Amino acid sequence: MTIDEQRDAIKRELEVLRDSGVHRRELSLHACKRLFFDLGIRPSAAAVRELTQTGSASDIPKDIDHFWERIRDASRVRIGGGAIPHSLEEKAGELLGALFEHAVAQAQQTLESERKAIFDELENAQGALREAQIRRDAANDALQRSEARADAALERVRTLEAQLSASAATRTSQEDALQAAVARLESERTRLEQQIDAERATNAALRERIDSLHQELRQNTEHYAAQIKDAVSEAERRVKPMLVELDSLRSMASTYQTGIRDASRKEFDFIQQLSAAKGRGDRLEAQVREQSDEINALTRELAAVREQSTLSPELAALLRAWARTGRLADADFVVLGTAVDALAEIPPHCPKCAEGEPELARADDGFELLCPECDHSSGVKRSRFEAVTRFSETARTDNVNLSH
Image (cartoon, rainbow, N blue to C red; front, side):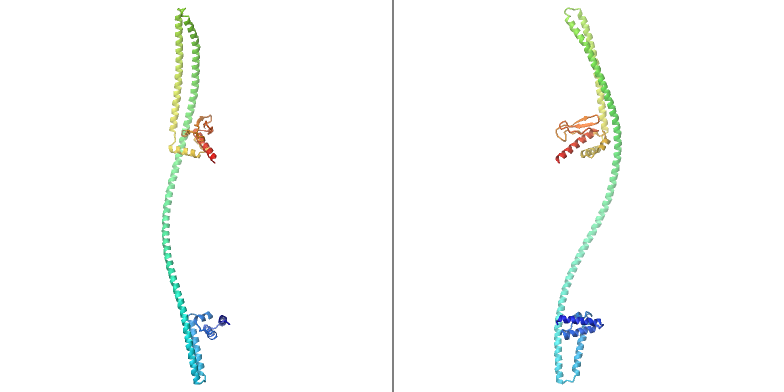
């Protein structure tokens, strides 16, 4: 049986004894006896503790000392109680002394080996302790750095919270300012809409007046033209016979000296009639000039009204920007009407063909901007501003589709 098997058997024996309620010292003594007598191993605290699985570091050495004391007592009793010769007793004493010295030497060797093992374990433990101290110092340094970073992060958090509070206050003030600006713009928009409505009503009245004046001017012009035509026809009708008669009288002057005075008188009458017809034509021409001057005055008055109703530069720039970016819908042009026609700038060249010069034509239902070169048209729109805007938008859309 090997040593490991014997050790296992000793452990099983000790387990049986422990289950039967044997005291710890008896277990230790049994383990010492089996180690010393059966295995020839000097009992040690580690070996006994491994077999018994019980006892403290101070109790097991006491049990081992008790085992050795019992061994010495048993040896003295056996030697002193027997009836042996003195020489044999001396030999037995020498043998026991030699055995004891051998046991002491063996114990010292075992002690040295265990002491060396303990010292090695102590050195290893001290090395592990130094490494642990180094790791502890490193951990302390890392902890200090972490605490410093945490303090810095906390300070940064406080700073960010202060900045956030300031930003919130600034945002609140900006929102208040924005709301005030929106309210001001809304009131300004309402005021401008009212002003546009008033200007639209004024423009409508002026357009009606201008249309009536145009109608009256057209009627007067036609009437005066008819009168001038009648006067000229009448003059021609009267002058032609007189000229014929004058020629006949002049041809007969060499023969009929007496008819000279009659011819001269008729010629004088003809000249007077011609002067009267010319004077009547001059009066009609003066009346036409007066009507033209009245039309020019009305045109200047309309231009002045348009200048008075001109929008603010900011609003005009905003409307032009919306028109260029296509943000004005049909409903917007219906609301604006012809109130912003002064903002309509006819482009000098067609944006589609870049060669033609667009022409603005007045249709019965509105206005139409047409390029004579490429026939690009805005269509009939309600106002000049809408016609110019749609003319440019259609050209941009066509160019984008061609590029794609």
